[in-house]
Image (cartoon, rainbow, N blue to C red; front, side):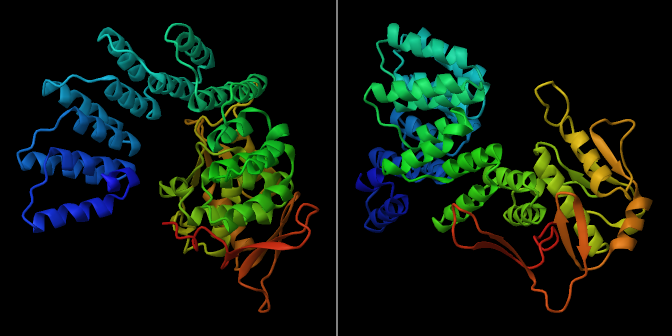
Length: 464
């Protein structure tokens, strides 16, 4: 039980083995405690294996068993497994309670299955069960994922007026995040104030939501306020503030935050890297954008770009990241034309760039395709790149012009870049084999460097 409460799942399993060695047979209570420890330790697969083991021993799972196991699968983001367990417990003539429904609803909400979440809620009511705050928070999460702020606000009014339930911090976190998705910064800030007026203490998730939803103008003050409260920013916090830096044109501040999060031992992810790349590119620091992209790629953030041989798949990327990906890909082809893992110019085949439908601006105009075409026109005018006649979501780079460009510009030299495009400099014997991003700003008075070891490239990052 102590291991269960402390989430020490490995210790709990060791104790089970000790019981076996002493000739003691674990009972249903033992297995339920083991499942709970696995749930706390986010060990979904181990919990499912224990579930099979207990039945092999002739033990019959009860509702506590199923509720705990459903919670473990939800924590492991295994929605299908949670729904199967929900169905199985009823096949065993067990009756789900409000915990069963609420937990399964959370699993569906996190998986983006809004309709199923509300279907379970209706079923709960039909059984005569009384929803609690956890139930309603699952519904609010589903609304947030679906971008339905109005429905979320209706549910909060319903739970207070009809159920007598008071919103908690989780409730407000979902509402504020929903405001961000709906681009309602004023409403988000009002809810943030309301939360505190109720005597509730905002947590890190609250600040993560309000930094995004409240508008980038307030992001820096909120980031400071979070730390003044003694809260530790997580990677989502830093990613959100870096995104605010991008929107406000503060690339030096973005770099300082990027270094800071690494010093804290946090691992940047694609949500962190993307605004970093965009901020550097917008400021005309293309070398820095390129080095950050390669660093991100080395962690697997952009591995889907190279899923198709002879093509670069830019779908789902922002325009700045997509442009940077193309620059890095072309630099690799120029440096190592026959050693590039995603395309071989000697194949004489055209090089495809997949943009898909891409994102759209406020006028519902495609963003990605024209951004890449403009990149070739402005920075790589020697290379012919056109929209595919049969597929508007694909650009075709002419193999002959690409081969000619590689022949004219090939070699393992450095690529000096400015906002006006690439300027090439031949590598000398005295050059270092590292790209160092150095910034000196008023916010960071002493020079600091982000070092990406080795000549940055897709090849050196292990693409293939």
